[in-house]
Image (tube, rainbow, N blue to C red; front, side, top):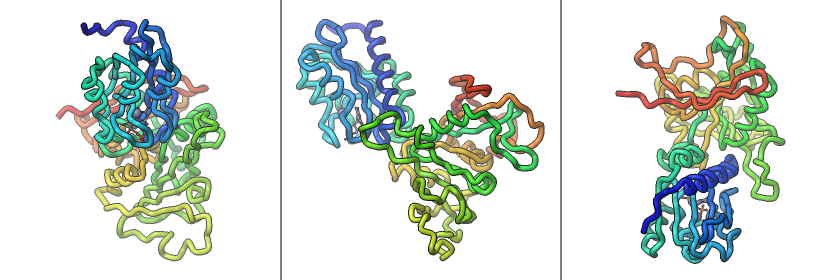
Length: 383
Ligand code: AOF
Ligand code: ZN
């Protein structure tokens, strides 16, 4: 008889989601996955999460911890167990070999290469349920799920502003609107992203480094595969990035996104004799109304296994991303301050009449030092 989903089931899946979150920021380009294995009597026998790409899958870690106790037991997995042999063997098979008789899955695997695990388990007599705490499991793995389903990275747009929504003073100065605590928080988020994207306006105005401070990166996974530093991307339609810009130094690789007809500082001889530019690459994109083809940029980044993008300034580029519907999450740092004049955090975004307002939903509001961090996500527009 099929057991009804119980409170205990929900609690074990909630724990699996919590375990999955431990892999955040270090598994790219793979998903975050958590797994809890119970023995036949319903006691927790093993837990696991996926820690880095190429490493053992969550199910395998949890099964190893459970050992013989998994026989006749239940496994809770946040993502459907894989049916393929990739960098590691199929988890559906590992669950069968371990003798697990019931598998509870939160989210079906949208990756065509790996999916089919639920079917394979059912075919061998294992009871499989899909959908428990699907919303929570979607949320924890939203970057990877977006990457697989849409074929583009998940984009987080970050801004810092005064309470009246200004990110620069009237004279153009814009640094240090928010507190050191907020800036440290930004470094933590940067370190979790695969790419950090900025527009040429920001590069010319602030000369940002666009790196995650080394002490903040790595996700505490000492001894495991070292996480590559986030790729720095400058959207620079006309090739105006100065060769002395800090973003071109050797601290991390950099990609300049130029229009297909722009002069490239790397290709027109200006860069000769500048060895630091060895890590700088150029991608050519079509010009679109008011900028470059951002869909093309994200597609290119996806082809480089960039699963998550951290978009930082400036207002023009952020406005273009919003207009194109390419912002999946917004993280705003609000300082308790007014400027009353100066540049807005967001530039023109295709909403010149109130009916076109880009509506968001607040997801989280946390104090960070003296500032507020507001996380929101777009609400799909009604047509
Ligand atoms: C993971 N970790 O815990 C689970 C995954 O690159 P591979 O060969 O390790 O396979 C990755 C695919 O396996 C991934 O895209 C997803 O569809 C599936 N499940 N992957 O990295 C895990 N359970
Ligand atoms: Zn697997």
